Length: 73
View 1 (cartoon, rainbow, N blue to C red):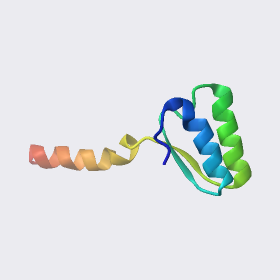
View 2: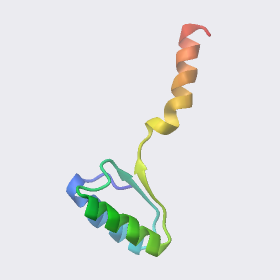
View 3: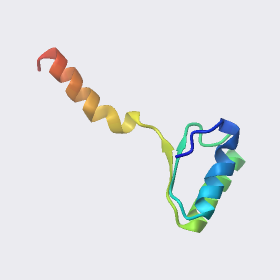
View 4: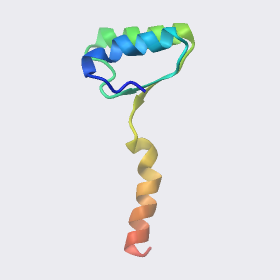
């Protein structure tokens, strides 16, 4: 997981990809379009997954259940 300063996301993502590691990168993915395109390209070349750390998308069902539970539904 890459959760460094934003300006280091590309550098660390590319280094991780070159080592064959899948990458979960904290937002923002990069600081420019060119940087993000390079990150995506290197990960594709190395055959590793690149994903932005966006936990809300995965927590939504949990949040819904918690809200239902607290509302007595």
